[in-house]
Length: 263
Image 1 (cartoon, rainbow, N blue to C red):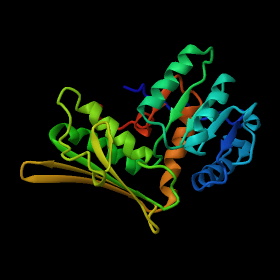
Image 2: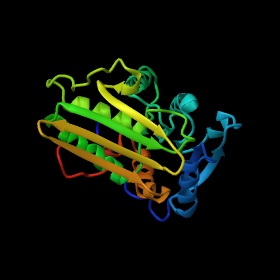
Image 3: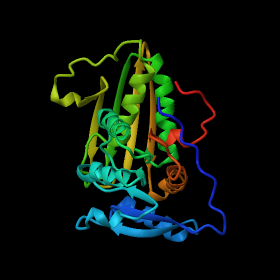
């Protein structure tokens, strides 16, 4: 279970702004993060890295925000943590095995840097995942359908992977979900034993439905992202929490006070 990351108190008026190196600054999410940093008195841009930038441009920052690409995200995190710089990761592709390897890497190093990994900055999305995690203990059939814009390079999405992993964790001791004919390609990918189906379509920003089936009934928990503004509050909360993060923390649910016990 991840250790909750407690948001740090806001910097005092006399404190200098936190210098942020933003990796993936030209992407859609990167543009949102950059706009929020530039509008804040508490943060300033130390460097803005794109696909042609050298990672050395991060050096000297107070905090690194990685919203780049799954193929380079690990290199970003490794370089930052080796220098003792905390990292906020919004890049997809950080599944359980990769996170476990990162935890081991930090334990074996002399770095005291913290890493906060947020698969989805939307408050509605994290609440949907939390509700699905609670419900997952009461249904034997569970499948996930996620959809994103056609330009998203990875599938399943980091949010869907995180949702499946949390449901499986909550069901520990109950046995695997029913997933018949999972060997057939049309049945989708299988994450933590749960079938996940990915759509990549024009006209969609982000969508996830968790469908849970039981005797004589189904329950569907759906979240739709309609605009990037839905990420803003989660980004600001995560920036604050990432400054004092210790070790590796995963999920916006560990930044928020949900007022409920984890399943």
